[in-house]
Amino acid sequence: MNLDPALERLLARPDIWQGKGGENLVHGEPTGFAALDERLPTTGWPRGGLTELLPTRAGIGELRLLMPALARLSRGARWVTWVDPPHIPYAAGLYAAGVDLAHTLVVRSRDGRERLWALEQALRAGTCAAVLGWPGELDTTAARRLQLAAEAGGSLGFLFRPPEARDEPSFAALRLALSSERGGLTVEALRQQGGWPGMQFHLAATDLFPPMVGQEETPAFARGRAN
Image (cartoon, rainbow, N blue to C red; front, side, top):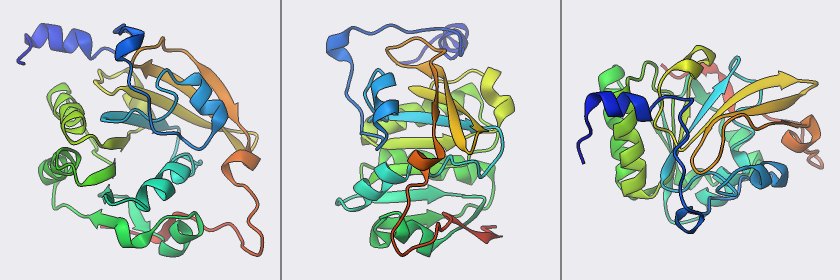
């Protein structure tokens, strides 16, 4: 369905809540954090939808927030695909978090246009359980195409955006601002499909980084850059 451009911009505003009947609200993929699931209207990451994560800076625990779901999904039949991560995914760190590396795919693009194309194709294909992307600049048209692609493919789409993007229009089903506090992570909902924005709570460091017997904490990224 083609929307009037003015209506499209209005629907993408972060302060507009689009209500949905409870009977139409799709339950999500459990995040692995009960406190977070309880506060999300889909009781987890939105299936067939985009989640935007806006950390105040990279490396504060935004990937740890996804690891329980990625580990579970990677043991299924579909791929977990990373599109243009800023650093090389660290195999030992992913393995320690329970991710099946045999179902993990890393895609590197040559430019922004190819990056958005790769994200859209991965989300739409139906062969990816989850798609992680670092899209850079994202206008409303591209954002809407990615959301529609996630719906078509039934994928969980995770887009990592800079903190200054919080006031930009978004078609994501869920949009979370993340900040580091007391060694843990403060989560603020900027947009929720089927719920009001403004929800905020804290995940303790012990929740994000549970002790692993006989293992030291391993990062999800190696030190080298992906590109």
